[in-house]
Length: 373
Ligand code: BGC
Image (cartoon, rainbow, N blue to C red; front, side, top):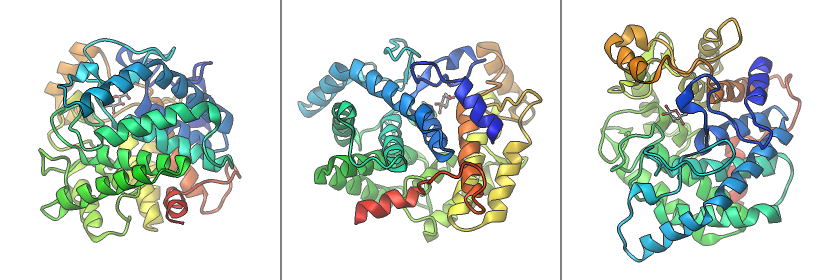
C-alpha cells in the first residue's frame, strides 16, 4: 500500500493533476473519474495536501469550461438538440485545458464522482461547507448534474452513448447528495432522490441491478451502487444477488472483468474492480472475502511496483487482445486508478486494526448519515 501511495504521488503533476497512466499514450490525460477516486484514496491515508491540490486543479479545469457547461444547460432547458461534442469533457489535458478530439466525451459520472470525492475530502479535513474559492464550481457542476442526471450518456467505460447506465446513476447520486449537503440545497437532494427512485424502479430487472437501460446484463461497476455511493444498502437483498451474478459471470482467475461481452484488450480482470468488490465485502463484514480480493490485486504488481489496468485478456481472448495491441500498443502497465483502489481497500482493511495512516477516515456511509441528519 505504501508503494502504491508513492506511485500515485509520483504520477501527480505539480499543478495537482493525476496522469491516468504514465506509460500508455492514450491515457496521458487526467480523467475526472480516475482522478476523483485517486484523491479519495489519498485522503484515506492522510495525504490530504495532495488530495487538495487535485481538487484545486479540478476547480480550475471546471472554471475553464464554465461557458461550455452553462451553454449545455441552457440549450437542454430550451429543448435544443445537443451533440456529445458540445458536452463537457470526461478527460482533460494535464494542464487542465479541454481536449477537443473525437473521444466520447459526454460522461457525466466523473462530475458526480468529483463532487462526492470533494465532499469526502472536506469532511475528512474537518471543513464545514464549501471553501469560497470552490463554491462557483460546486454550484455549476451541481446544476449540470441536476440537468442531465437522467439523460443518456457514455458510461464509465466510455461506451454506449444512448443508454442510461446504472453505475453512472450511482456516481451522479453520490455527487448530488454531496452537493446538496455542501450547498444546503434541497432541490439537489430531491434530484438525488429521483435518481435513486429511477435505479430502484428501472434498473432492477431479472432479480439484479442491470448494466443499463439497454442491457439486462451485469457490469462490475454496478458494485459502486452501494459502496461507495450508497444508492442501495450493501445488505439489500437484490444487491446481494447482483454481487453474486457479477462474480458468477465476471470472475477471471480470482479477479473481476468489466462486463460479459467486453472485448477491450481481450477483457482481462481489473484491479480497480476487484478492489471495489473487496470494498463491498468489507461493507457487509466479510473480511475474508475482502482480503482475498486484496491478495489478488497484490499478486499483480510487477517487480518495479507497477500495477496495470487489466490482466489475463491475452489468454482469455487472444484475437481481441491482439486487435487492441495493434491499435494502441500494450495495455497500460501502470494505472494510477488501479493503485488508488488498492489503497482504498487496504486502508479500509487497515481500519480493522488501525495501523497504517492513523488519520481519521470517513466511511462512505457516514456521508449519507450526515446528510440524513
Ligand atoms: C476506462 C475508463 C478510464 C480510462 C482511463 C478507460 O479504458 O474505460 O474508465 O477512465 O480508461 O483510466
